[in-house]
Image (cartoon, rainbow, N blue to C red; front, side, top):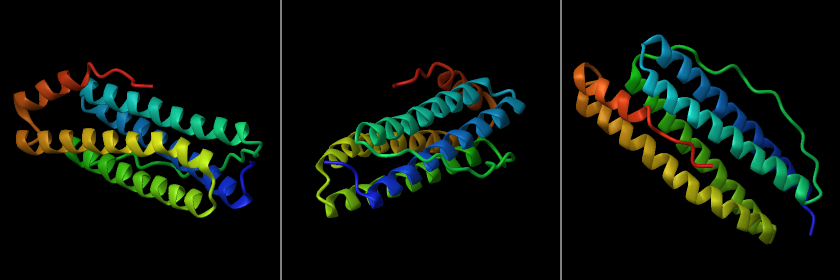
Length: 166
């Protein structure tokens, strides 16, 4: 079964969103570097790599299903943030938005009885649970620390050891 045009278009849109997320995280990494928070920056660079890998999963899936990938332009991400807490709150908002997009894709695949796409999207649904959990935990830790002092330095060191998962 090949992809319907509607589903192919939606999956191509998702590639755009994943690449936009990747650029957002890279911009956040650059911001964190300006604060000398190299652990925060490292976490964001790993997130950048994961989002780019997610885009490639969609890219490969479309090709595997005989579809055509159309790469779309993305907007410049924000470059200024108020604080490390603001960075992670925006990261969480971004992950929540991506979750909603993945859910809509799944709904579309279900309506079209496209079982291979539904199966592929299961991985993304599980991934988004982890993505939101991770960002939420860091937001809560930053709130507890007040975003400054020794606790911020300790959190920076903790984030520096993150490894890519994909």
